[in-house]
Length: 133
Image (tube, rainbow, N blue to C red):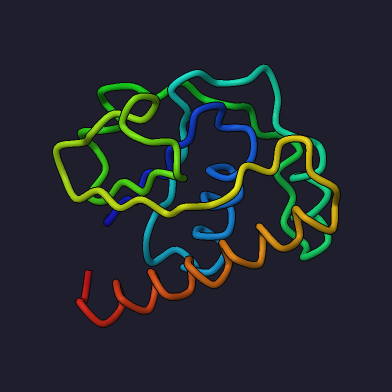
């Protein structure tokens, strides 16, 4: 199955939202996973709240450490604006989405970040569908 790896530094916000939204909107056609180069202890509670508003529950998820196995397993990796210093280059296709970090943001700001990710996720899924992955 075509796998997309969403990477950010802490795996507590952007990449967790991207994984959940990608899996939701791809409806089993593709698989999304996420990880961080320096994972936090827990997911940002405002991110959990913003996703619950659209009936996606990630409250049981935990930030994950990026591993070599994840990098090798991914067909596509998407970094969340963290740059090469924090997010390593992967052997397969790599894209960088300049997405604002939700850490310290209000629920209104996190909703905007969520909606930006939804837009990008839907475009990515459309692209994958058109290339018959």
